[in-house]
Image (cartoon, rainbow, N blue to C red; front, side, top):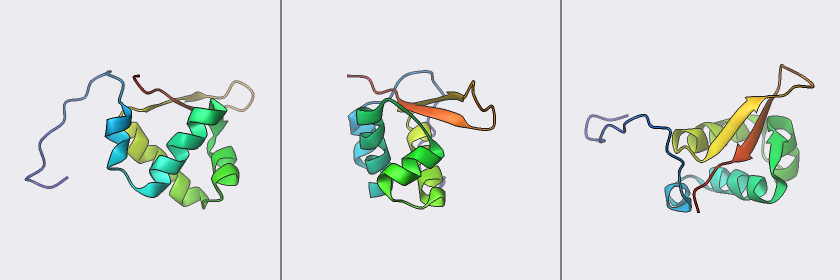
Length: 89
């Protein structure tokens, strides 16, 4: 974050598609895939989008910063996280 960037308050508010608009293309692609597939792991997202795992991880971090995804631990494998889109309509 640069000194000229306004500080964003941490809130529990959900993001909107407008928040996604200025993100990198990889984040937009991951958001669209989650929109159509409900809940996925990072590996499933990498397989579906054909993006490298590192790029998917970066995209998920950017989407999380904008509060447009929800993540939780998988009950079947606690080492994995499940991601779903959480966008306000």
